[in-house]
Image (cartoon, rainbow, N blue to C red; front, side):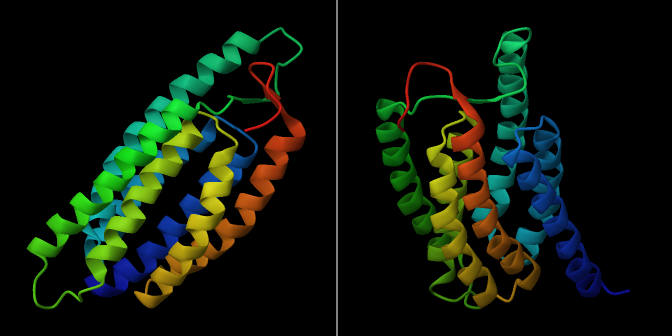
Length: 208
């Protein structure tokens, strides 16, 4: 088996692990964070192979986010143990100051990443690939950060991002990942309504 054939099959495996992660994420099961870490390790190789170096670097962030998310969510569950909220989805009210700062930082990171990627891109790299790589990377970081903080608005972000990402991955010829993100569009809708209908706000808030 050649390396190209192995990596083609490996991308399908990585996509399957990533899909399992989102399914567990919808129901707020701690296993989601372990799967997130494994998926990030797998996609590190997939993205390097496909020349998406910013997204490859983002996988390191996702591993850290998985560890942070596991700790934060575990502590949240411990706080609710023995109370009327035990076993329920705990949603943190959206913090506008955090939102404004995070979006500003993401925008800055997008332009910085594009500049760096365009500078190091070889002649075999198309002009638009650095834009795609930077866009995918910054959106992934921002949406994952919001998910880790248990903001329900993260599902809206994933819905929009997954549609854009699916189109871009198919254009890049990354079929398994394109299919994965197409399914993500559906899971984002399911996740939003599951949290909305079954979630409990940590404070007395009823809106994002």
